[in-house]
Length: 424
Image 1: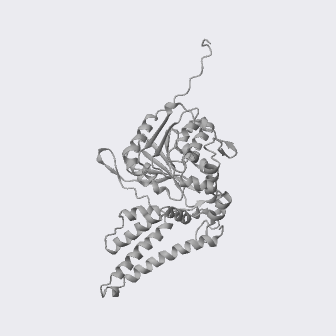
Image 2: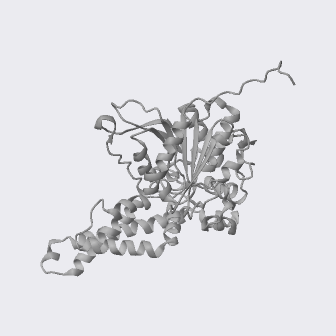
Image 3: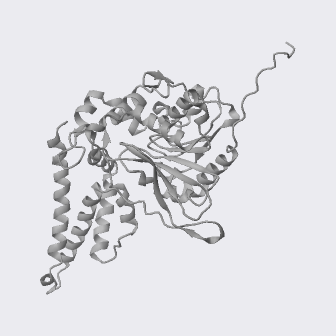
């Protein structure tokens, strides 16, 4: 499978379907097609419209499209995105609002690198902006990164987070969502030993696989059922000639998308059939519910092969984080070194990606962190997406996270040295 021909074959199939959709739309739009009433032409146009948009959006990074934010005194502030740190595999970006005083809450959102862009957290960002100064990790599509940029695995990911935290300073509050949870924990532990003054004030870990064996899901079962050799042979491909990263080995976004869709094939088939019907009736809109969801869902990115394979091997199979045996550049990262950073765990009761217990396992690793610095919350009835972007997040989890940030915003008190003259 590790051939550019295979990658280009998938891209050719996608491009062909996009072309067929555009061709159907163009054919149905000829004036002569309106000479006589023909419902088949309306259906052809609708099919073409939905098909073209579906396959076109798969290779386009969505815009952030952050609307103006209403802050104090009812004033609206436009949101301007600025790059704080620029690196080959991902940037640290800042959502600034000219004219608004800087918020006391400085939040770093660690976005997943799991097949979708950081824009998957758009609603999370929008919900935090009125009350926080928000930064986010904006990971790049591996297909666009030249081979000369080198490799990128879980250790490199961890060191990126370390650099971002150092850049933002110790008064930052880190919120990691899903896939990056264990690596964010490791990055904090790395700082605790290497540069304690650069540690964040608090760490909120939302629905991530710290210990995948704590509660099995289809994701963990898949990780245990296949060998690394099978994964490398069946999932890894080389970027084709169309992109700047030609020759780089990746886990293709289109392959990941096929896996996503196959898990709920009937649901997706129904959604697209209904959208074609709405388009034929003239009821579909550019930003209707279907398009808003699928514009993001279908926009996938390639992951570096090293990152994908090392995540499966070290996080899921070997459980390096769960066993407190994770290493970076040959040095062990001891989670027990975290002694001052407040840590909050958030899980969803109905999360079928990172089931309850997988993220909570982080607290058991923090052997030297006082119980007063630990907190957890299990959201009833919430699935994976709902714990960071849905109604459960907006109404219940977000207020808890802000309260946790406020409660741990003061600089941690240093331990007082023992009194040598004290009586034994």
